[in-house]
Amino acid sequence: MTRILSHLGLIGVVLLITAPTSADDGVLIFGANRNSGLEITKILVARGEPVTAFVRPTSNLENLEPLDVEYFKGDALNAEDVHQASAAKDFKAIISTLGASRVNHEAHGLTRHPILRTGSS
Image 1 (cartoon, one colour):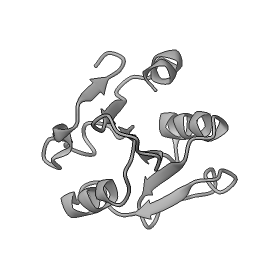
Image 2 (cartoon, helix red, strand yellow):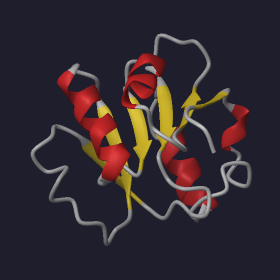
Image 3 (cartoon, helix red, strand yellow):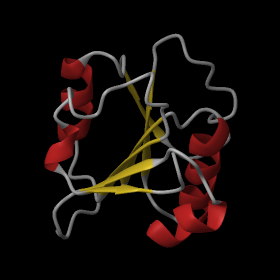
Image 4 (cartoon, helix red, strand yellow):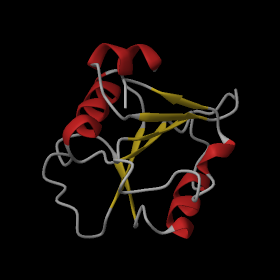
């Protein structure tokens, strides 16, 4: 996972790795429908990794529709939606490609997972 993020040279991507587990529910990605989140989603799907995309109810899903991904609809600014999404499955990892101005990861309790920040801020 970290190899993919480093290879893409992404700035501001936050990878939240769950505790070591035999989890096989794949990866939850915030911001999967656009930009770097979409590119990460494409790479993971190509590798056969199950992906759940956290998207807003009003999100344009046109770029995700050709991919074999599941959706969790919610608002990344709503802590309850974030908690429900992260608890919905036994994810190997949670990736957020949302900008710091969009979501405060600490406020949503996501710092209980080890965080790997890639790129420079």
